[in-house]
Length: 132
Image (cartoon, rainbow, N blue to C red; front, side):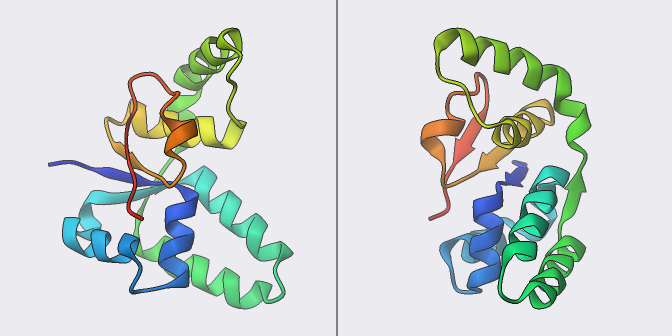
């Protein structure tokens, strides 16, 4: 059974609209197969802190956090360091947080669900899809 790691942009889609395609897909594949990375939580909390309604957004993030299994990105540090060097040599680096989220999916044998296919496809050996 395929397991999915939701990139930050997909989690934001879930938070914004229960009728989004991402929400529909989570229901279709079941929540039991969907995960989020700790780095995604950090990105979400940073966005909430900068918003006009941080407390409401923190509450929504905490709700999301309670619904999905959380993966620790530290398992991906070695893979991310190798991918970072490879991409640097190719002249196509990725932002650190994106690299860690993508490599977290890769080392756990998951498919990364992202709206950022152009960038995430650069991570060698990573399965990606988009639910938009």
